Image 1 (cartoon, rainbow over the protein chains, first blue to last red):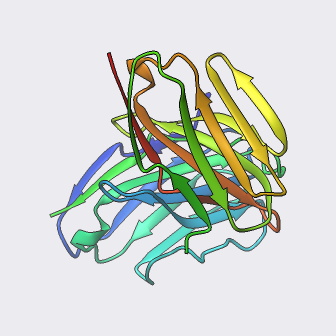
Image 2: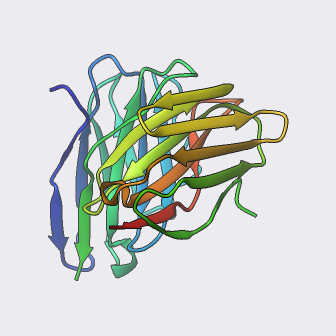
Length: 114
Length: 109
């Protein structure tokens, strides 16, 4: 597709269950970012992938959060043993990876933990 | 202290007014982005700046690298400009981004 695609668009899960969120970046984009936005709050950096380099995981809030990306393709963000405070919109963005380039955002996955 | 500070947090204007949103940052950057987020969450990139000034329609973005400050201006504001405007900086050392808390703009008819 032409843009960044995220799935699912909405996810409701029970506390304690694991969830997996998917991001399909724009083809050819080497950089991929995951962000979280809690209700009424700003964007919070989670993790950043750049090509085959080791990802920057400095924003992951706990060891329940992990993300993978194979090469320059799809990325998955996994949240284990979900808690209610994990409820948020999870946004993915990609960019060509060269420094001064724009980032393109997906529509996000709205996660609700009940 | 956040690396990226925006002001004001909330802004209400009458249609037609000139709007200014400010962004200050404390780290070395390679680029600064202005983003627009509408209700429903979709984010659109408005500008990417590394120096000077850019203009697109009624929107103007400026950056002063020495002062580590950027402004987003909206001329002849319209109710459809109502959104959250987010400043984001790309670190000078790597390629990740850090965000301001956003400015919620409401333009009343």
